[in-house]
Image (tube, rainbow, N blue to C red):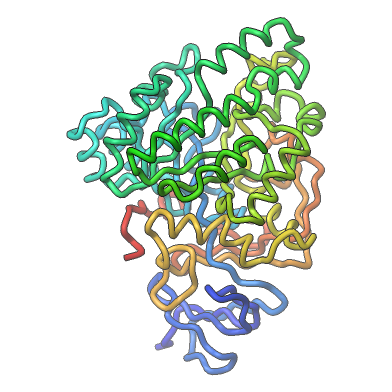
Length: 462
C-alpha cells in the first residue's frame, strides 16, 4: 500500500516564504509532506507538474450566487463549477438571497442547499438581521464565517433580499458594529452614503440614461469615501473587526490612509477596478455595470499604489451573475440595469497577468487573493498554505500559457453577460484544481462532483 495518495512532482511550489522546487505529498485530504525532489514516499498517483507552478487553492472571500433564489442567473452547481475552473477551492457566499440570509432559519437553509450542490468548499456570511444578541448567537452557532451590512437602502422592489442587511441610518450602523464587535468575526461593509446617493441619483435624472458616465455621476466617489470615513470613525469607538468591501476610488484610498492605526480594519478591491476603467464600461455597456461603479484611470492607479503600499491587502471577485434576459432588458438604461459581473474565472489569470508585467510578485498576488483572506477569517494555515496538515487544496498554473475569455471558454452560467472580459488575453492559465486531494478541474474540464464541497466554519486555522 502506498504511503501517499498523490505526489505532485517537478513543479515550483509556493510555500509561505516563496517558491521552492519541492515535491508535494497529499493523503487523506491533507498535505502529508513537502519533500526534496526524489525523497518522497511512494504514492498511488503521481502528477507531473514539470514546467508548472503549484499554489494553495484560491480562497475568494466575496462571492454572490444568491441561491437557491434566481436559478436563471446561475446555481450553486454552475457557479462553483466556474470557481473550480478559475482555480478557486473555497468561496465565501454573501447573504443577499430571497429572503435575505439574516435569520438563523435562512442561514441553515442556505447551508443545506450549498452542501447538496457545491463542487468546492464554501462558507456563508450572515446579515445581523434584527440586531439582537439572540439571533446573532444562533447564527454563530450555525457557523457563519463573518457578517455583512450595507450602508445603503434596499433597492426598489427588493426589500426582502436586504431585510436585516441594509442599514442606511448611521445609528443602526453603529448598533451593528457594537453588537458584532465582540464576536471576533469580520464585519464586511458595502459602504456608500445613502444621503449622498439620493442627492446624486436625483441630479443624474437629467442625464442620458444610455450613457455609461451617467452611472458614475449617480454614484460618484464621494459617496464611497464619506461612508468609509464615517464607518472608520465609528469603529474607533466600536473596535469591531471591520473590512471595507470593493474600494474603487483614490478618495477612499486617502481616507484609509488617514485612519491607519485607529482600529482593526482592512480593505479590499476587485479585478474589475484594477483591470478596467470607465472607458471599458462605455464599450461593454450595461453588461459592465457594477456597484460601486468602475471609475477612472487615476482611480485605478491609486488602487494599485494602495496595494503596493499595503493600504489594500485583499483582492476579491464580487462575483455577481445575472441572466442574459435581465441585462438585455436594460439596454440603454444604466440606472435601471442590474449591477454585477461574473468574475470568478477572471481573478487568478488577471493577477497572474499582473505578475507577468512586473506589477507584483507571485507571492504578493497569491496573498491578495488567498492567503491574506484565509488569515483574516481565521482559516490559515488550514486554507491558504501548503504545509503539512493543511487542506490538500491545490491550484496548478502555467505561467507560460495564456487565458482568453469568451462565452465559449467560460464556465459560469452568466458567460453570455461577461462582456467586460470578452477578448482579453491574459498571461497565465489554470491547468488543474485539486480540492481535498481530489481533482475538480483539469485542462478545461470540470470534474468535481455536485455536493463534493464542504461547509467551512470559523476557527479551522487554529
